[in-house]
Image (tube, rainbow, N blue to C red):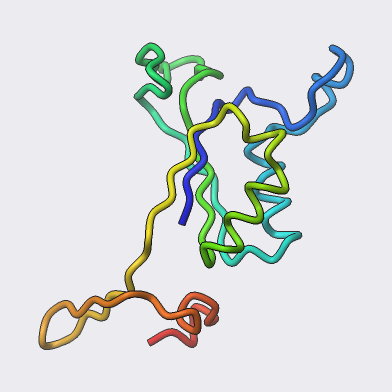
Length: 131
């Protein structure tokens, strides 16, 4: 799994003011591109309070949202596929904080919680097929 930290106001396309207003938010473009490239799971998480890259603490206001408040796009797949995704989109991700996290498979049953490294088959299984 990787988490890509960015601002909701970050845009997918750089360029003129006209292009900037017409471009898609980066978090939406990353999720759409992940889907198009066959990444297993991609979601965008908005935050309410926090900071990133040693910047100031920001918060989601009661009446207006802060377009600079950190959010993250989380992608789940095999490490090599995630590395290829980042390499292919390096121009968009160059200044972003990206964190890789190894995943484990957890089984919860009468004996408690058993955990082990997730196998490639478990990571690629359909949600209903996973046991």
